[in-house]
Image: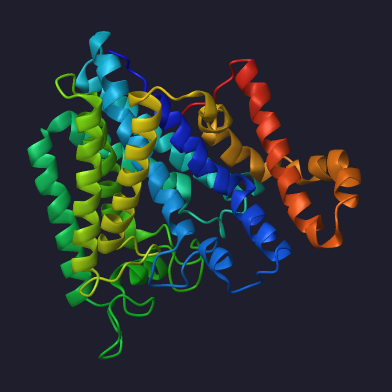
Length: 365
């Protein structure tokens, strides 16, 4: 059977596009059309202030979900080549550690200002959550993992609801930065090394729930890998799972608010529903129906997602965009200059990835 899903590369590329300047481009186009700050597009291209869910809140968890989907494929390939589960578990540990280190690099590790270096990061969270989900996949069957996932979601929700931060004022919201136990751990155990003063959005609160996000991806990958199920039925199964997660999120939200910074249990279910839906759509179009030509733009991004994420940190794509496109942007109406600049940035990033793609250079962790 085909041990690679073309839809995953396309979906990963779609997801990374928004980090690669797509969000800023959408805002600039919206403003050029006369829709300013506070409008729908503007709001969706920014994270929710605290509780709630916006489009930009789905980008990170979808990427983690995709990493989970791919693991049953990569594990099966290595096992069929003679690798042992023990060696795969060690490889997962090494990959998790490398992602954690790359996260530190992204946080300016090479400045050697270790007294103020932020320890938590997006890549570090991905490394931890993916690593644990891989270990669970290698250790126990899907039924046991389903019980573990449910126990984590229910357990963390109950814990945060009834165990507020030590010293919190009576009546404080246990899901607020002041009242949440996980946020208290951030500012107590990693003080001086977090994103803000009260908490870190990639800190302690969401560690275990984020593992479930990766596990949902693994479940989806296992389902799609089955050879005894037709592609249409696989798509229907993914859609049914999306509906189930969305319904559970809606039922759970009054007790445990949807919150990305805390990676709350209801957030896991809500973005899990979105991720399953997006995967179902891409899988049916690309892998079931075989309509692949249109995915090239996204696959170029998706097959080097870590490369572009890190490269934007230290390569001046904005300067290159201004150098090559300043004249063209100047020919545009004034109201469209900002949008032209944002588009130029995306184009330069994509051309950089295209060069890597054409030379078959793919950075993998």
